[in-house]
Image (cartoon, rainbow, N blue to C red; front, side, top):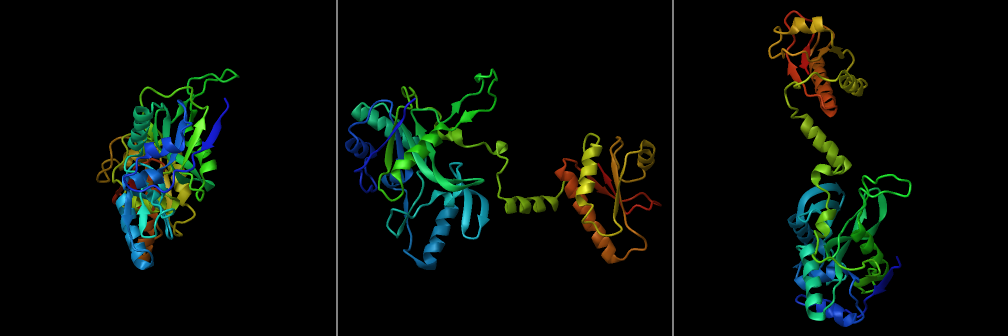
Length: 362
């Protein structure tokens, strides 16, 4: 495969209502079937009127920008100082919801296209119907990446090609079947186009030639295929936000034992996790002896009949109120650690006549 990346100069400033198909076809009469158009989302947004008026400077501008950001945000992922990483209503996770103040009048902000996939389909259709050109279209914007410095362009909208090249099921040269390999080719082409577009060169469109042998008959699923489902997202929150969420959940831990016996190794791991932070005198004992456990059944209100594990929390006697507060905090730490190991628990009063201060049914 031999690729060419070609700039499309001469488009000029785009304003609301401009016809992008006309602008691009006029500036690039050399377009061929099978080319991939890499189009900066900003000119799409401008043509579609996705701009808002804001004060040119001062606190009023910041307040107006915050209001716009809130409207474009579906979920806050992370906040550090003035930086906001959010998930947009499209599903994209990016800084400031993609709101841009560059290459636009100081009294305006540019928002992302409302539906980038639909915008890509409309541009592709217009070029096909008016100029008999069968091209693919990728609408792009700039994003940062987790664990990596620097920015790169990625695909927000795709039409006429698959956004992902799925290699699963293929056999590599060593005879191994590929299990997980899915290449985000639309993002790779978007980054390639950015190499010759740049931010200050006023070249908002590039063409990648040689990648496609031909476009799809349909428009495909678009860039929506690149948005990871929330259930598969292992990093859906920033570090500080995840810790805060954990603390909130710890304050409202489910109060009930598990349906099956707790894994002793998981219980031991939870106890070890809090061993260095509990107050002196607090002791957690994982009781697994069937006879001891059987002796507690029926003596502790709410104790399950099934053979689940038990953790006893004990404090030295006599105790004062401060000791009780510390012990209560220690028990809550243990319950949180148990929950982190996937072990639900119920806090129960100790049996009458015992030296235990509390019982946890697991």
